Picture 1 (cartoon, one colour):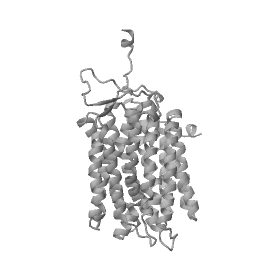
Picture 2 (cartoon, rainbow, N blue to C red):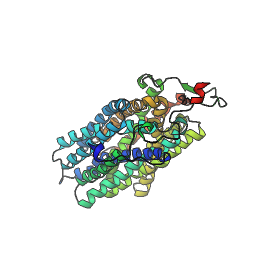
Picture 3 (cartoon, helix red, strand yellow):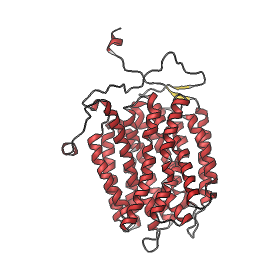
Picture 4 (cartoon, helix red, strand yellow):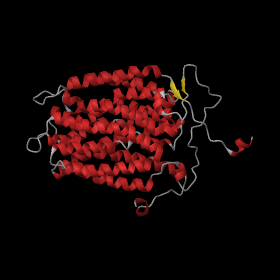
Length: 445
């Protein structure tokens, strides 16, 4: 139905095809964040006795429901995207996310809100792994670090926009429900653009792309150094049996709790520390994501240009610095400048290794054929850890609704330190390049 009503757009110049895919997949994941962060911002209003009077414990259970569903979905949709393609999975998930955001805004009881956000978690999980596979189909291994460094700014930019946007909507219309409804309407526009612009693979364009999309073999004049590992698993080998993919999944389990604790609780944390309203809390919490684009681009360039496509050294260095900052974060002066700067620092140090592990390395070691499954596996295991991080503030909240934030951040520091230590043995890991396409001349010789 959508295919016949809404036309697909193909650039007349083949050089723009990859740019089109980069743009629409980037925008799609930004869009997912619009409906993902609505509840985090709405918490400030929902906590008030005259509105709903929801306790932190109840909020924690709702977040946990969302994150459990999100983790389950990661395992399902990555495999599904490898089998049926990105387009079907993402369009379905995005549509369900829009509907659930509308229903969440119309909710009148806490139980219904919890059920709706559980379904929202399943819908949200259709985004990352399929879109990562999609972008990986159009860019080869030697350029992925830089390309995905820019592309992975989507969830940093998305988080920044979503926090501010939802906060503004709730404040402007004077009702927390609009924190769900306005972002849902915006995601509907992105859904239509996705129908028009997205393609699963280069062959789906009506023009021939002038660039190879498979990974070229490494030049004979540039052999691997003796200290580097190579990944011998081929695209036909399941990522579930790939030791490096499994290792990255374990590392991501310890990293993702920090991102989701801040994602879901930073607005309320700032409201408690500074007394800021919904709009300002959403904006200040967005400082975490504001540093994200710089972090992911910096991480991508460092891994490609300094460490020769090795992703792990950048991750380990950033992990260790991030652990130190988290350990001392709650001791920063309780003012807007100090906490905003602290969140900027956390965002810069977190998003670089996060993007390298969940996207670039997932495609590198999962291969183009199995990249959706690999990204889904890594993010699925990571999302189990995210569920722990999302529930942590509620777990460490006393009966009088006061949270031990110092302990929360120090536990997260220990998680990140564990991730760094766990990744050190893979310091020199690099993937085996996929074979370059054979030309007619080569096949005749």
